[in-house]
Image (cartoon, rainbow, N blue to C red; front, side, top):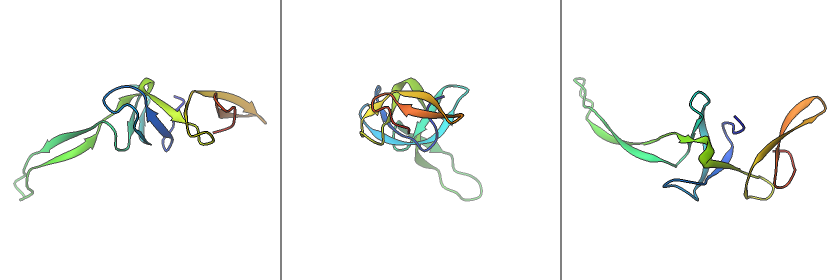
Length: 101
């Protein structure tokens, strides 16, 4: 996958389209990513016998990688990602600016 943990992305489709956030987790098996502050849903936690009360928690759920685009650090706009080999090392480049990410 071309998107890595810690990348700044913009959500292009879905209920959170237009929002920006940081990648918290990448799930390559299902081609999904978890974006901080996006696709947040409420889930219920059951009360336990130990005395912990039941509650509702907000949790971030995965989004398919095709619905997000990396934000170029140089132009601050969403961009596609390409690869270039420089000095025997494979680096990611922004298709928009042509600079290394």
